[in-house]
Image (cartoon, rainbow, N blue to C red; front, side):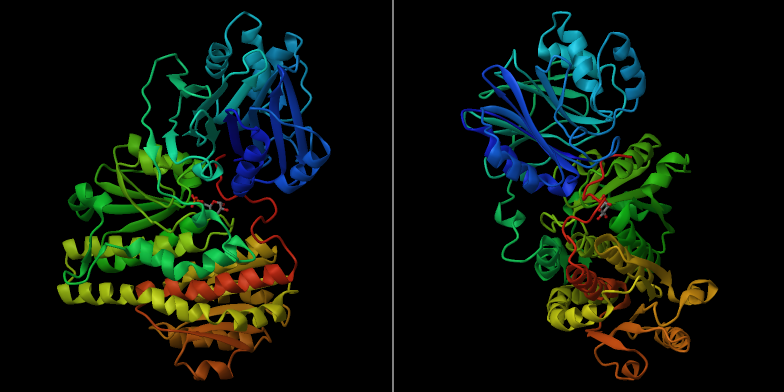
Length: 610
Ligand code: G6P
């Protein structure tokens, strides 16, 4: 993980780098650091903790320059402290490196370098990079050549930037397995982990590919491969705006993103719903739609919240397309030599499009000849680019670490894909039309649920001090139970488990007492009567209950302690509605506990390490 940003130009780089790092904090916030070259000398200021602490430290240290790099860390090797914070120096302290990724052979490289007298001061894997580059510089190679030679010895992943006080007119950036973009300005250039860090300065973006190394000057850049092959890079004009990545008056990004869902879902559907034809139009899948509809099996692979979306997708696809569908954690899929056939279609779902395990699973499946398809939010991300075809969710930038609007947009896209395949197979026009019509009503229904924010906040106050929570749902709402529990765990640090409601009897019920509340997702659908029985079972054991229920359900109020009433929809779309109160419940509990909702401990938004 980690976020990196670099600047070269005529301006003072320090405020540019600090603002860039603030945008990248979603990638990690264990420590932050800046490295600047001033008068042929490398200067570094770094600190444990968030970028705000580094900014405070900078008030007491004078630092400025026209060439600099910044790093925000998510610790993998070495505890979060100042020594392990980036940038890292070489021994003669004239070279600085910031790195995102993991150098897998760092111990071998380190042992080799130590034999030649190189002294290491940190516990990081990253520190081998400046020393390794140094070992080529002292042989008389240029900085660019030394970086290429060093990287040809490195195994693992990196997005990195190097600056050197003897060549203060350039920075070198390289990518393998960790995202990196180049921003082209007017007599200034930028490098960053993603465009949000440099969007305030340019919309002209060059996406770097694995194995590429770029020499970036203030008015031009030269791109080559690690093996020194020259390459032409295309400059893309991006459409993202700064407004889209600001808090917009909300206390937290998470709340803003929860509240944005009526709009983000409209954006996911815009131009894609063909109401008259009872189907969807997905430009990114057009070239493969027939192959997709005739595939003998669909696999969905993802991590975290995106994996939960995949589970809902499985229910949708099997119910309506009758194509056997399996969902698998990307991290498991890639390591167990899975059976993948050429007529399988495999969807990889990822908000960031950069999750290392999902990307590796995609590459594995592609090598095996499957039709690999991406469902991504981040435009131009690695998974989006490496998929054969795919669909963007268009939820807009999601900054809060706990995923909210990206999840509901993924569900909408999965519903659109289901509609597309099912109509190509055996779904009738009438059925297709009724699903399409219902999808259109979803944004308004979400707006209605969001009006319950105050009620949910009051419920949150009642439950903020509990230590454990159970989330229970059936059918389509079982994955929502998992997602609701994950949201609570991630930001409030309360232990929570999601379970299929009926499975509760086979274990979790042993935990129930007055201290273990349960959230039931209990809309009026075909499993309603069964879930009422499960509620009774918890009640009989004195468990407190919060129910997410249908707005016309009066019966449930006699059974539960709190009910949150939401509008009805068809079963396949119900998760898009039932998850909203659970997002708000987790949010308010975390806020009431005084926790940092947007930056929960130990987590990062984009997990680009395995
Ligand atoms: C991290 C984030 C989660 C996210 C998961 C998968 O763990 O904290 O919110 O669901 O990665 O991320 P992706 O970008 O692939 O959807």
